[in-house]
Amino acid sequence: MGSARNRSQWSGLLLGALIAPTVWSYSPYGPVPGPLKTPEAQLWTRQDVDAVVDVSYVTIDGYEPVSNYGAPAACDKVSFLRFRNKAADGNPEHADADLLMVPGVLEGANGFDFIGRQLVYITGKEYGKNLEVWAMDRRANCLEDLTGLHAAEQTSTAEQAQNILTGYYYFHKPVDGKTFAGFLTSKQLPFLYYFGMRQTTQDMFAIIRRMVPDADVRKKKVFVGGHSLGGIHTSAFLSWNLMGDASQTAYAGYNWCAGAFGFDTTIGPLATSTNGFLPPPPSEEGYQKELSLIESGKIEREVYVPGLLGPEVIALPQAAAVLAERDPDGESTVLAQIPHSPELNGILGFLNVRHLDAVTKPPVFEDFRYTKQALVGLIFDDNFSPLSLLQAGLGFLHGGSVVKKLPLVETVSGTQGEIGALLTELLGTQPHYVAANAGPNIRHLGQGPLYHWARRDEIGSLSEPDYTDTTGLVRFTYLGNEPSDIRDFTTALHEGPTNLTEWYFPMRLLVDSMAVAGDYATKYGLDIDYPDGPTAVPSLLMVGDQGLTGYKIGDPPAFPQQQLIVAPGFTHLDPMFEAVNSPSQNDYVMRPLIQFVLAHAH
Image 1: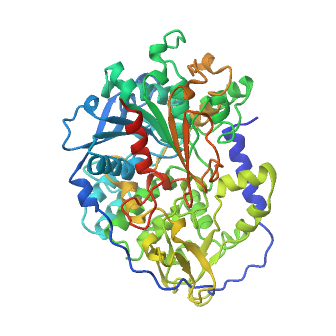
Image 2 (image 1 turned 90 degrees about the vertical axis):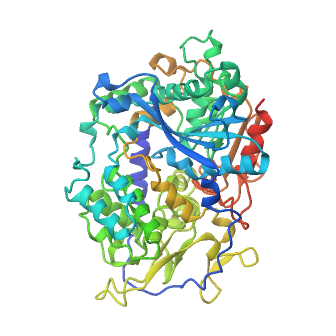
Image 3 (image 1 turned 120 degrees about the horizontal axis):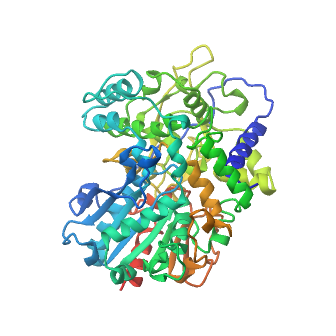
């Protein structure tokens, strides 16, 4: 049965199978990255963008309340970041185009923080047009306690921020009279059973109706799209009937917009667009069983992998980003100051271990010295992050020896068939590296060099794109493989009232995302009345050749009304963080998207 639960079990078994018997012996030696390039001058700055773009966090009533199921009253609301030109009159119906963006798995509205600002800025400055972007937070974000994080953002130093973060989230120190109640567990979240595809899709309708109440205007100016799973959301929306009556075509999703777009995802008829990007739909009996297991709590109601991934781990990047923005080159000490759960130990071990059978053997993660910015890079960069869903091309480590992580790359490249495809989907396509030098020998760990993070414009330039070791014989990466600036990425992780990572991603949503392609979907409130709805509007896909879709350069689009751009060197998160204000980065996403929506708006 193709299910999220079985998929998770397969992933665990496969990772276990990768652990080969080796004789582990610590060595600090390996190739050392060579000199950094001179950073380039940006074409425009964040200050330039902020002078033009207004950002607000809008909260409205969601389509169906869930407080009657025991959810907090705040979960009856749906929120979104609204990006608009300050020079415009503020009426979305007067904009030249409006874009609704839906995030992917484990992702909040800040996944679109950078691209939302840049799209509005570029459209005004270069095209003389007025664009709005609405970046959606799914309702599960209502469960996050961001009190300590918001307080830390108000500080001026990393030390002050770290004291607040560790005190509030780990040592019961109040902030503004509030004390952290702890990260929630599945047993505390029975109502999360109702947070599925129906809720999210209807909330998309609610946002559009609130912002553009005139049906004729939204058909001409509104564009719907998303990243990763957000593309499946978009396909479901275009196939949906808000009234649950196929004869009422005025309430068909494809009649509520002028077009669609997607970032490293697929958009199309659900029978084909989910298959490949997601497992095929389960049987109706299998779907019923999955729902029963989630409702009873026998399957975790939120995405949780014991010993590896949970709300605490998902929240960590936001805290790391707050510290990195205040002191990027200062040594990171936060992990040494907090107690470690099994999940935190598990993810840190997986991040920074050379051989998988040595996860619990020294040196452990804390034996290596990293700057605060390098910690963010290790979590998300495609050459270091162990999970393809979290990968972006952000640069590389610098300051000490770096070696390949084994046996991951060799195992993936040598494995064929379904298992090989799943390994690639889980781990990504890029070689994985780890820092090698934690100290001169096993008895003097913690005494190695301080590893810094080399940004994309420091690892390469247009004239010298390769990032090599000091001998020039080992190439770690190259400029074309690093399309995102870690500074932009770090800001988006924490900035403002929301965040990039979603602490409590509903398991029901993953199960529903496969079930929408089943012929039984409408019987379970998944009102897919127009399975071919996605072909009724023009669409643009912008995907990475190292992303999760499987598209390669030169591939054709799926159907006539669709355009396809395959960006070389882009991994899963890169389309939203393309360094468009960098003279060394080709534009595969932002201007093509602007040109697409302006061409199809009317």
